[in-house]
Image (cartoon, rainbow, N blue to C red; front, top):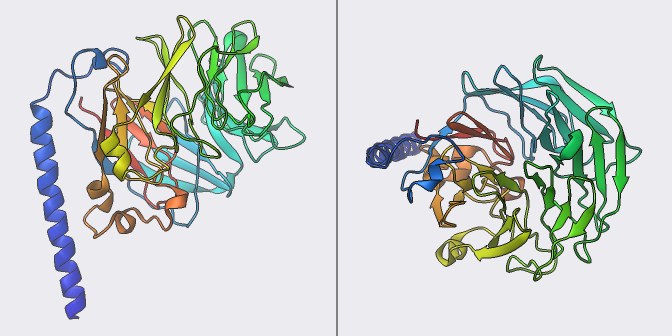
Length: 385
């Protein structure tokens, strides 16, 4: 009896502290500079202090596993997520900020490509099929395309409606899908290192595709004509070696004509200049590296404020980079994850850091929704309107 009363008092006190912190953050944000205009221009203005507000969605999906690594939104604002290694079809309703799990699900998918043909594709990691979301109707169909699992983790649509999907394997393979005909193909490009693994792809407006190394040390390019080559430059290291995963994901930013690649275990950010195919790596802040989990980020995203953000993986900390100035900032959301409980683990429902606090991310207006990983509660980040 006494124990339960004490626990309730602690929870109430923690919640009160959280409310005060939220009020403080709201007051601080009201003093910041002009409202955001778009993710391509707002980062140009000045260094920002405001950080997005953290919110848990209603609904819970429990289980000690990484639930999904995919997010595809239909034209009604419903986000569809298929399973990673367990059958799942999670729907996130952006109109009500709630999640639910369908009775029937699918598994084996990592990553999505939103194609120009009106469909969004679920990429096959542990599946021989490609998933396809009709964005008009919200219907999902699976099409068997491969004899074995391609081990794909990422992809992007290049020129002529061709989706390029690199494999996360020692010998790098590039799988292709012609969105006009539905035909698939595969070729072996120049290898980015002894370990060819790639987990990330981005395309510029001309249809040139850039792929950063996960375990290798070279950047792969597939030009608009489908020719593949390695960019010239010094070895890409991200400050790590061996089997430490360097970069996961790649994001093209039109306003600077560059591709930004954020690290998983690496300690740097890779920036590729699409105008001349040069690249550089810049260090993450030393004070951040001292306290961050080594598995920092699942997949970065371009936010409504024009900055590129990391997606929470084995950590409650988030870092971001201004693509115009290369300024890097970071923040710990542990208090927000705790949500009135004593720990972030209790508040989020996560049982093991290895399953992740979140996975991929999807931007809708001034909000960013993050994929449900090992937690039972999904989250979103609300940016200033």
